[in-house]
Image 1 (cartoon, rainbow, N blue to C red):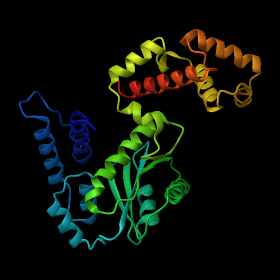
Image 2 (tube, helix red, strand yellow):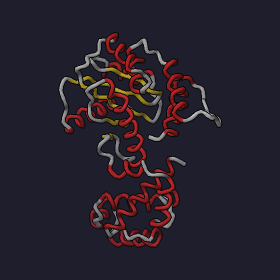
Image 3 (tube, rainbow, N blue to C red):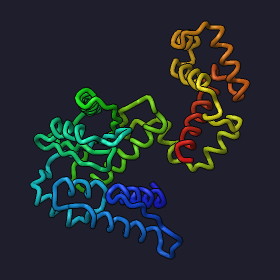
Image 4 (cartoon, rainbow, N blue to C red):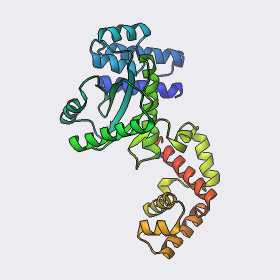
Length: 298
């Protein structure tokens, strides 16, 4: 994450904490100093005398080494544990009823619930032994299913490998919050995102906007996703999802084969790409992902 984005994130955290919109005018203070000041403001506002406040401040990276050590002693945290934060995001702010359900489900044993803002929280689990990739995914799926069944809300969830020290938690939280942003932007039909399985979205997320715009201009005739109708977008998505198989795609779309071929010809005239060919299909996929990314950040 670059320094400008870090500053924007800290300003957003201050807004979530205080309800006040902060902005930065032209100043001679460099970016590092600005980040330090904003972290100090956040630090002053959090109630780090509570365990929840300690965990939140730790995840946000605004505690010193001495404060981390003091907090681990004060709250009797087992430093031999593995720490497994699971980031949960909802489209709407969590209601008091939903927050109560979270408490009933997860406030037991060594679990902690850490609100980040109105729509985001972290469920922090302390583990005694490492988990395989399959075990991690199973735990996260079970958590998601339980929440959606009991609270009757739709959530997205992101996670990373458990970490073995408190010092590693801020980096872990940065990874899972970035994974949430990448996953929500590039894979809107998915709801669980692992920080090490974000595919092409992770690459595009770290590209400058100018590179994405140039790619779309050079390889996609400058067309953006919002220039296409829903039928065209859905046809492209299902065709790529069907492995470029015309029969399979026609079945999923409930179309006659000839109707699908007509649509694919129409897409070729629009974009200059014959997505029946692998290279053109990949070019189309990348261009559409870049276009969605640009739309999210306009």
